[in-house]
Amino acid sequence: MDLFEHVGDGGGAGDNTPEFTVSEIAGTVRRILEGEMAHVRVRGEVGRVVHARSGHLYFDLKDDKSVLSCMTWKGQMAGLDLMPEEGMEVIAEGKMTASGFSSKYGLNVTRIAVAGEGALMAMLERRKKALAAEGLFAAERKKPLPFLPEIIGVVTSPQGAVIRDILHRLRDRFPRKVMIWPVAVQGKECAPQVAAAIRGFNALTPGGALPRPDLIIVARGGGSIEDLWGFNEEIVARAAAESAIPLISAVGHETDTTLIDYVADRRAPTPTAAAEMAVPVRAELIAWTREQEARLLRGVRQGVERRRQRLSDLSRILPRPETLLSDPRQRLDRAEARLGAALERSAARKRKTFEAVAGALRPAALRARLREAQRRLDTCGGRLAPALTRDVALHRDRLGKVRLRAEPLVLRLGRGRDALARAAAALDRCEAQGRLRRRDRLDALGRMLGTLSYQGTLARGYAVVRDGAGAVVTEAGEARKNEALEIEFRDGRVPVRRG
Amino acid sequence: MNGTPVAEMSFEEAMKELEAVVGRLESGDVPLEDSIKLYERGAALKDHCQKKLAEAEEKVALITTDADGNPKGLQPADIK
Picture 1 (cartoon, each protein chain N blue to C red):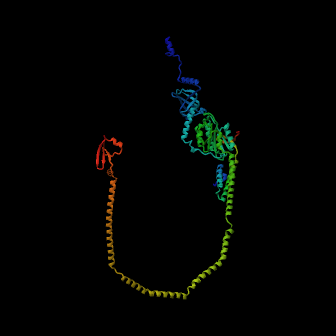
Picture 2 (picture 1 turned 180 degrees about the horizontal axis):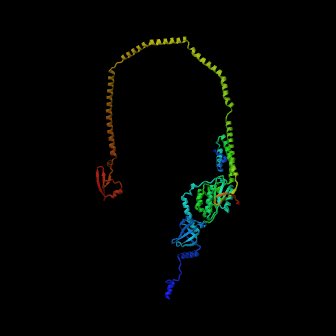
Picture 3 (picture 1 turned 30 degrees about the vertical axis):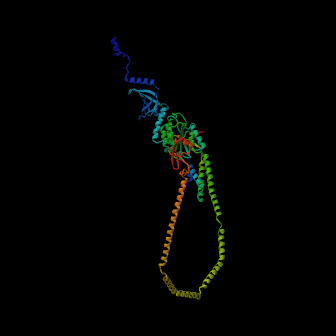
């Protein structure tokens, strides 16, 4: 039995398990895998991405431990809303497949989406930084909007509130020619269509059958970040940055800022606001033009009026020629009338003066005056020499009479000597008399002194009482206090003891 | 006064020059002959501005594209 058993089973436990060929097992694995996991969603970070020349897309999804090979076939590419980029957090959908050829399994991805808003925002930040680094957001790149565009190109959906809001506000302010380039404003067609529309408007010829607009508005209403995502795509941002036509972006609500807003020349918070930026208010311009017209007319009228006024002012100030000349003319007339008489009077006056002078100038009169003068000169000349001689003789005579004598001097000397002697005698006398007078006076004073001194009093019978020290005692009480007293009499002192 | 023919001017150019012309006339320091010329230029600019303002016509059209997305033509848009 054992033998048979062993032979039949081919040896060992489980020998009854059927045998597979390699291809059979590969096909079985594939069938199980694809049968069990025909539709899965996998969340992970995109790793390496390869766009194969064949048109297929290969990429990795990974987490911290594992890596999953993913592929999307060429025919499936059109269905992808999002192209995976390395570092992107995504949710990939598809079926698992296994390849018997290389013993590998993978995920055939047919849909792919960014995993959550945070991941989208992170991706947007990365793009923003990259474009900012290229200088696409620089303020000096911004073009000024035309003051009054003739044709406005609008890139948006022809349906919905956005285009209506724009057209209404344009109509209110300044109706214009508007060309709408219809585009998908969400989904995978959005970005390529918007970019193509911006480029397409720029490629038109000014004034052509399809005239080139002089302003572009790219508009879309509010929506989720995913809805607006097309306006965050790099191709849209680049097309807007390259636009030679000034461009206003008005995508989403005021709080949503998409990549195109950074590169647009102006960003409008709403489609209505974009229309307001695009055109001025016609009614205001009409009013302004009327005002300019009035000012123009007033300006030119005032210019003329001012000159007329000035002319009239000046002509008032300017005197008439008659009045200007009348006064000098009168003066001339008066002067002319007086000229003849004045000339005659003047001549007569001068003639008279001349005659008075000329009368004195007759030759006879002059000769008489000359003779008289000659005579006086002769007389004086004759007297000059004798007078001098006489004067000299007189002075010589007086000099002879003057002589110096001694007698008067001797006489005066004698008189002086006598006077001196007399004065000396008088001095002696005065001196003697003075000495006598002084002695008498001294005697008298001596006598008076004797009379007035206490000794004189003692002589008249009075006595002086002194104490032991010799001091004079004048009070009875004081005398009582002293044991020993001394009484001075005229001729001496007697000691007294009180008993 | 620049030499650009008024008819070729944009509204904004005409507007700016008109403003300058009015300013000069009002300043009163323009010789009489010049002020007449200035007035004539100003009047032409004003007419041009008014003409541009009168040309306020709304015309809305949709661009049609061919299969490659290239513009093909215009079709009237009926957007109320």
